[in-house]
Amino acid sequence: MGVDLQALQQQAIELMKRADFGEESIRINAEIVRHLPKDDGAWTRLGRCYLERRQFDEAVGALRTALSINPSKTIATNLLAEVRKQRALTPTAVQRASTGFSSREFALIESLTGNDLLRALRPRMEALFDTLNASSVAGRITEARRRAGQSGVKLFHANSYYPGQNRGHVYAFHNGGRWEPQFNLGWFTEPIMPSCLRIGIGFNLSQAGRDPDRIGGQEQALRYFERFQHSIAKSWRSELARWMTANGGFLQYGHRGPALEMLPEHAVDWVLSCQNPAAVEWIFLGRWMFLAKADEAKILGDRSRLVTLVDETFRALLPIWLTTYTDSTSL
Image (tube, rainbow, N blue to C red; front, side, top):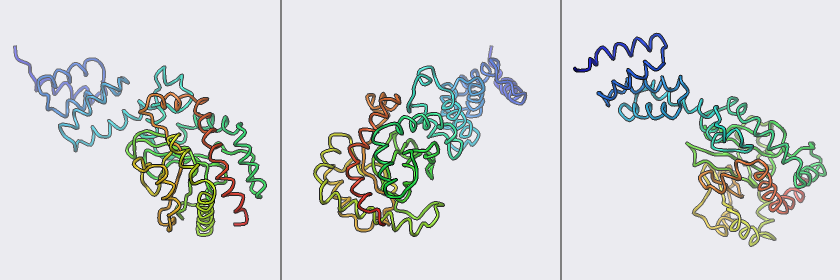
């Protein structure tokens, strides 16, 4: 006895109209795609059913199939984005046990933007900042800033993190550090680059943003960067390259990812030879951790181990920062 596909299609549509995403709707749409594997509409309906039932992996599979058949199907594209968002916001038992930044947090960075992203990450960020603020290296940095006439008793405030201009990026820098050599943390994921965290010293040399006196601020940041170059050339050239070699250190500049192809000594030379940093806008040197590496993923997901790593990195770079910052307090 043949299958009445037209009748099945009508039943599937009627169930969708009634917002009935239960077992019967799944059964009917699954039957349709079994006989018509190129029916992108049935695959999309099937993905919607799985989404409503919070079967996220099955939903992703169905919607990706729909889009492989019809890449311009807007409904499937929007549903797939919603699946990824809801899956990121629904931690597994393993993810709930994480205290740092696991695949779930990186999924949030990939899926959310603006204030939605900041709210979703707040518990992790505040816990990380609270622990970092209690470290001795944080105390040394804030004390150096106070001696220079700056305010603040914490290295990171609760709101010291910001969404990037594009989805897939969030960053943090020490309190008051916009126009200073920044102790910087930056989280990245798709579509910008594979999931990773940077830890180190960065210079934001652009006038972009809403900060007051952006022209004067940029001029100050540029003077700090010139002093940074001088400090490295005078005392830290070889030592900084050795530290980068031993600790997964890479240069990042402009709107690029980390310069993984550049040897540490060449990265240091690039910094020293940079003659127009304002045109580059962003320059960073520090350690990078990648979620795809199992040993690094364990550190990223464990707040205690992550704080230890950040503390070690800031501590190693502190002498260069102090030389750059304290010798330039008259800027």
